[in-house]
Length: 158
Image (cartoon, rainbow, N blue to C red; front, side):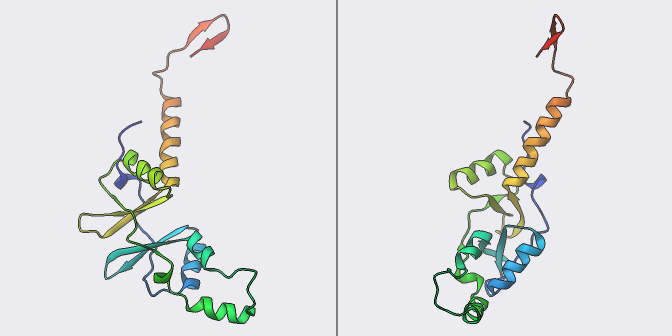
């Protein structure tokens, strides 16, 4: 596999929220954009990240004695800064895909905000992006004429 950089595979147009965004709005953005994480930006800098799992964790339990209206009222007031991961693990846009993948594996996370030298968000790289790289590499290897085939009888041996 070639040495690929994060900058070549990250998503650049990242959907973000602010710490004051209410939970239902964050959930709606994730659903509408079919994404699982939202970087949280304040004054142009990355301050956190909220995931679909964080949103699910903030939802009410079936064991509650509150009415549905009380629940909706309370959930509508929860702000992202109450449930987000503060100071998330990030990766540089100049890191290799291998380095980004290792950080994800080591920390058991499925995506990393990508920041530049000033700590500003420039993209996001996810396990899906890395999987795309692996699949592309497999396709390129399969199409490569460099594989030699030796024939024994009528069966090719690779």
